[in-house]
Image (cartoon, rainbow, N blue to C red; front, side, top):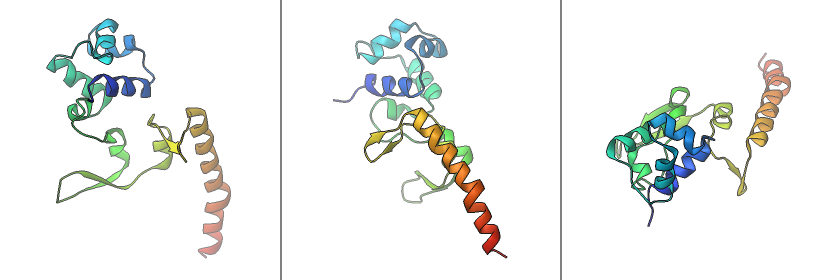
Length: 142
């Protein structure tokens, strides 16, 4: 059975926060956060809402009601459309460098990429765009 502890811990680690840092953000002690992550205790509704706000996810995601985490902190840089069928956001396009630097877990061929890898990939993409793609576009668009 899925519980709040696992998504809470995963999101905290994704943001690279300690239990104490998360606790300070929502006004509790690190021991309270530890109890939530170990499923020893459940947060009160106001703390659940605070968790959703600091992690920028829905309470449904935290409570394992929703299977997927949305990508809310990319919404400003993503052109989204809404499906008439279920009113879920569908990503139409995104900024690749923003995704690489977003803090989200990114995998390639089943291997989780570390931030150092993502930084290197971002630098290489920028280099390729500046030195190859853009000059070729200029040359052949005349």
